[in-house]
Length: 129
Image (cartoon, rainbow, N blue to C red):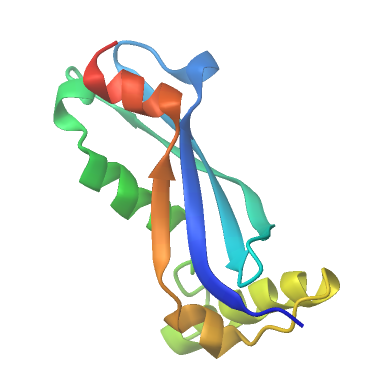
């Protein structure tokens, strides 16, 4: 069975909801496997930012930091501790991988490198094109 080597979040501009004062970004989290394949873990994430100069005030680093944040772990809810919230998040991702035939462990996933890639449309938007 192949192992997970890293996580990658792909961030892309959501053109339908992006305007001069509003940035909308979609985010898709994938696990990259040792054999080169990728498995989608989350494809329903994203965020928006707004402001007078949203393009001028948004950096690649901002996008990377926010992309990592929106794919989790989430903040604790109710009486849940941070450790419980994080453990539940990583366990849920490990379960997704197991359903795809990939042996995965939540704590191991939490320790993996997590890269962020920006899509072509998002790069162009940041460059002012």
